[in-house]
Image (cartoon, rainbow, N blue to C red; front, side):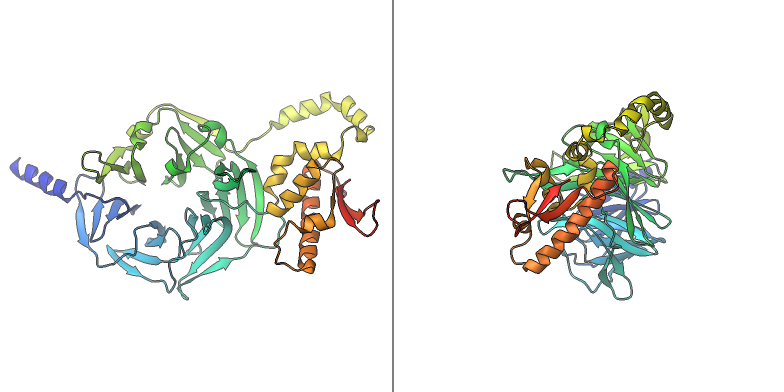
Length: 433
């Protein structure tokens, strides 16, 4: 008994006291790891620790961990810096610098490379993808096909790679209202990128926002890899997101009190435990807390479909019930104008257009005559651009708007026309049909 007590006391002393912002945590190969300024702490369940010295002078401790083919990488959260982590040894391998412009991006692995989608930095959200080249030891952009649709820029999205398909789900984007107030908007959508053709596909709106509390605070959101899926955790809710099976599970008995003061959460699939780094209010230090899967996710679990769907059988029945009305409306096409149809589908249309295209369409919808003069629209673009460049951009924007709107309201012809003004033939105008 004495030996056991000495052993327990010794390992209790090994438990690290962590200083906020001066440590890195992650799970790899069945073990939890904590790295501070001098040591690497390794534990399976928090009962015993192995401690190893490292000799890396980290510029900061803002790092994410990604495992690729049993090889670990520490990647700076703003991207740029890359370290390998193998056999409790840490080595820097990049020839880059600390980018600091891709915070809260979504890391994923494809063809044994590190990839990053989205993120935020330098006052903007991103929707691009960059990857780390092991040979050049630098970062490069993964260009998209010149397709008409791409996801909105965002941060803190969930990413999943299935063979050559990348799925990007939800996230947050910065929005500015008319009074210049800045806030974050939750995006409940799902996108698929074919990593071979580089083409995006919008998969639809999800049900996630229905299952969470309103006005989610990103500061308290945790996205935790969990059994080949992800847990989406807020201050009050916990959802399991299973993109492959179009499934969301809500843990009704989620122990939200555990989240108070939590800064990081990791899950170990071998021990079925969570490690939560939480604030100790007695001495102000951060402490690792280890909780079983059952205790953390206790209670009733309810299943929901991830994507919003309409029951096709109901559509079939409704269609036949409404045949007389459908035939009537075919002969009464003008009873509903184009503007009404666009407004009805505005949310879907908005997600497929960029900032300038949305502004053009909003102005047309808000204008009483649904007419905008060409010089006014050109003023939307950057003032340092040439007239020819603005004209070209406008032409591309109108083509994009027409395609997206036509697809959404299901018409075959362009709904936005460009022509001479009836009041002054020298002025070109844009109008809704």
